Amino acid sequence: MNDSSLYHQIAEAVRQEILHKTLQPGDRLPSVREMATRWNCTNGTVQRAYQELSHQGLVISRPGQGTRITTALPPEEITPLRRATLVHRAEAFLLEAFTSGYSQPEVEQSIRLALDRWRTVHKELNDCPESTLRFVGSHDPAISLITARFAEVAPAYVPQLSFAGSLGGLIALAEGEAELAGAHLWDEESDTYNLPFVRRLLPGRRVVLLTLAHRHLGLIVSPSNPAQIEGLNDLARSDIRFVNRQRGTGTRVWLDAQLRRIDLNPAQISGYKHEVPTHSDMARAIAEGKADIGLGVQAAAVAYGLDFLALTKERYDLVIPAEVWERPSVQALASWLVTDDVRASIEALGGYDVKETGRIAWLNN
Image (cartoon, rainbow, N blue to C red; front, side):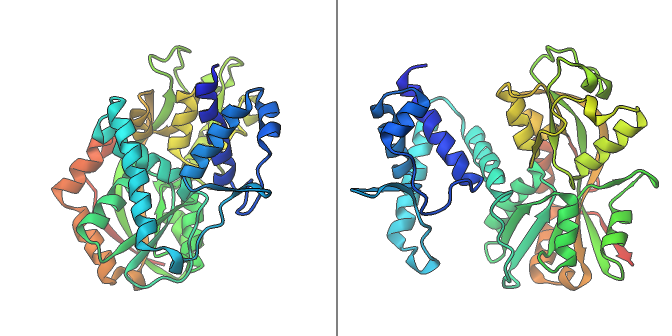
C-alpha cells in the first residue's frame, strides 16, 4: 500500500477512536515518529494524516505540546464564522464526492448513514423544550430519512435521534428521557409486535402506537451470494462469519427466538458475539469484507449494494405516551406521516410496506 492512501487510513483510525471515545478531548496523540513506527510508514505520511485531522477540526497542534484532540467549544462560542467554516468543509466534501462520480442521492444517503453511527454514541437526553422531539429506539433507515425531511417541512420542531435499541427506547420513555420510542419487538408467545413489551415496561401508562411501516427483515450477504447461503441454518457453517446486532434490539430478540426454534446453539456461530449498533454498521461490515452475513433490514442491504434473503416482515411502531401525543409537534408529525410524499420516500428506500404507515392504535394499560 502506498503512502498516499495510507494516510487516509491513519486519519480514519484516529477518527474511530474519537467516535468510540477511546480518545477524549485534550488527549495527546502519539508523536509523528511514534505513529510512523506503529504504521511502518514515513514521517511525512503521519504528518499528512494529522494535517487532515486538523483541517477537520478534530485535533490541534502546538509547538512543544504535540498534537491533541480538540476540546469542544461551549455553545456561546459557536460563532457565525465557525458555522461558515463548517459549511466550507461540507462544500469541500461535496465537491470531492461529485467530482469522483457520486450522485446527489448517493451523497445524501451516505451522510445519513454516517450520522446514524454518531447517534449511537452521542446521546443528548437532557431536558428539552416542547418543540424538541427526543427519539430513542431501534435504528431504522426510514427514521433517519423522515427526521431529515420533517426538519425541512416543520423547522419549528426539532427532532433529536438516539439509537439505543427497541428495549432501550421503551426504557427511555419509562424514565422520562424521550418523547418517542421506536420499537419492533416480536413476542414469541403471542406472535405479536410491541404490545406485550409496552405493557410490561410502561405499566399503567396510556400510550399511542403510531405505525411507521412494516419492513422486511432477512439475511444480508455479499453481492451474488458467493457463499450460497440459504437460511439461518447456514450460520453454523465454519466458513461463515456472522455479524450480530446488540442485545436489546428487536432484531436480536427475533434472531435468538429463531435460533431456539431450530435448536442452533449461538456458541456454534462464528461472530455471534461481534455486535454492531445499527443495521447500517452491519451492512458496512459485510461490504468491507469483515463479515459474510448478518440479519438486518432490506433497506440497509440496498444502501450498500448487497444481496438480501427475506425471512419475515415486522411492524415498526413509534410509541408515544398520551401526555406527549397532544403536543403540537407530535400532531404535526403524525399528520405529515400519512402524506403520499412521505410514504413514497419510505418505499424508495427498499423493503418497506407503507399500507399502514400512520396507523394509530391506543393502548390503555
